[in-house]
Length: 274
Image (cartoon, rainbow, N blue to C red; front, side, top):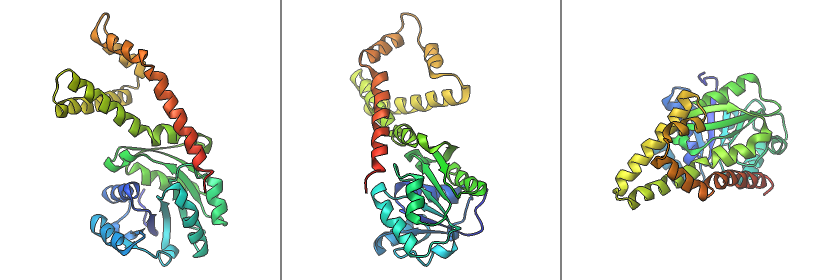
């Protein structure tokens, strides 16, 4: 799908907002000339225009009437002010609002806007920056099937996208949204292990990076359960089973599962904060 009938606005052109803009342009979903962004200062606007090649403004109320899709990529504690501004500046009820703020529910978004704007809640993760993101979306009360397709087009431009019920969103945040950080920590620890047994750090990290990438690709392309693929590597009386038993001694399985649980709980609490 190509977005052609109107403009696309991005409020918050930080890491995620910038990644989405680049992905949309590079995949041909929409042209740079139809994208605008909002920033707090004139200096930020100039930086965005230089780096991304799109229009940037500190006062975006003039852009709203022609905006078909509005991506809100700000922190949860900034959502209230942004929605108040949109409501006060005659946002068209035809404009699709897509929010990536953790913890902010569809009910909160719809009630804050006070009208019948189509709303879609999304939870992407940072690998969107390199076109390998994972995004989950959920449409609100007034979002049409075509607008859901538009959301898929936007997030498929930077990785993969699926649709789930909103009841799963705290879990999605704890697993997918925060997940890259868990993996970076694991990769760092494995590289440290490589250094401990004599590898130069840059070599250890290169081996870890390709190993993690290859393992993930194996799960995706073979369709096999990770446990089955693990068994393929684990030969009797071999080095792998010894290493795995050390990991189990450290309760790595329960620690990782509890980490997801803790992050999901905090994600739910974010929605309660003003």
